[in-house]
Amino acid sequence: MDLIVAVDQNWAIGKDGEQLLYLSQDLKRFKALTLGHAVILGRRTLSTFPGGRPLKGRRNLILSTTPDFAPEGGEVYPSMDALLAAAPADAFVIGGESVYRALLDRCGTAYVTKILAQYPADRYFPDLDADPRWESVEESELLEENGVRFRYVTYRRRQEA
Image (tube, rainbow, N blue to C red; front, top):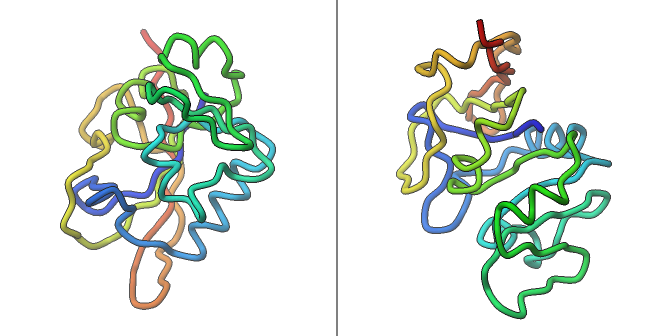
């Protein structure tokens, strides 16, 4: 299992139920990496998608304890155990905060878009630079879109000694 996330300089990922910002280059990368794979997400993350609908071309595994929540094109699971029993090994965890935190230890690779700015936020991703279990293995050149500078950093879980 892998994960994909966009963070600011403080590892913030969202505010008031929304992503901090949308970068078209990052959305294209997200699509290229996740297309054809299962994606694991929470109900609130799903609500931020266009029309609140599951992503096309992917198996959407949604964690929700809301009774009768059944979006067309999504598979809803009432518990993390039930979701994990259905998730293929090549699934991508795509948010939000509680889903990332619950599944981080099960992921082997983290595809992180690091936005070189700070934004007001109320949702955060764990700082992988400060976590000795993770190492940066690849970093893109500095990119810019509409005055926003960012880079792609790939982290891998260190092998246990």
